Image (cartoon, rainbow over all chains, first blue to last red; front, side, top):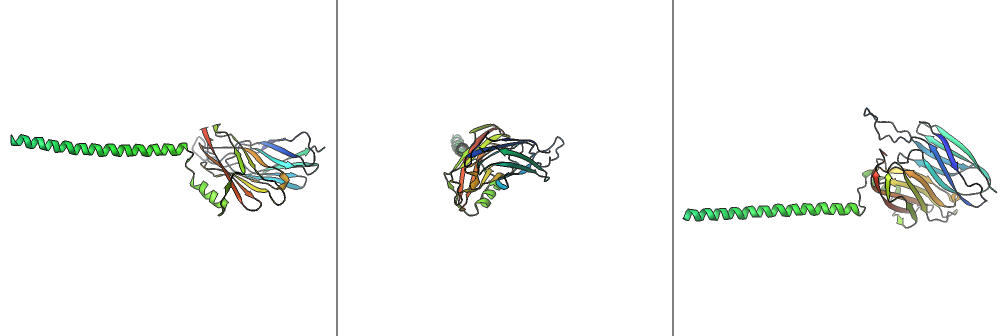
Length: 108
Length: 170
């Protein structure tokens, strides 16, 4: 299943040097690969296995996800605001498909 | 008359023998009951069975290092009604400066089909070593967080989560 509708929650505004919480949520089944369908055949694993967050050009956070992460993965991390910029969030699934979301941070 | 005495003696011997057998059985039984009692005690004091693959994963990640406790705050609900969806927050005490920061946080399950739930990579830019997510738990078990610091030392924290309805095939 393709990933869709990423949702990002940032503070309305932030100052340089502030530590902010970055909340991300994306729709995805995160099929574990351990379940069987009604005919007893195993359902193949289909998960988002990587999450990468960049701010400007720099990678600021990365996560490798396993089948133990719930469907519609929620991931939150912290950032010490280095200056104005835009986040680039990317989720990569088992087929290599990448879902990208751009979100600017309002630095005052 | 002598025959009668012999019969009486024999039956007394038989009685003694059967009494001995009964004693042996009952003591065996009580030993068995004690064993069951010991097992129940173990379960209530969070000595819940950990999978072989969890132990292997932990050994691999520690790579010979002896982890210390006290710097990781691992927050999970005490009772998870739905094992498909268990919120988890991991906070590691660290100044997050260029020469002293948390490099990697590992989230592990001790009784899921796969031990490694997630790996989080951090750097000083994060300012605060805190991550949150939601995880699956197949059944009641310990959840373990492991953090590798920039100087290579390892921190560990363990939390028991009681699961009412297990996360299906997590």
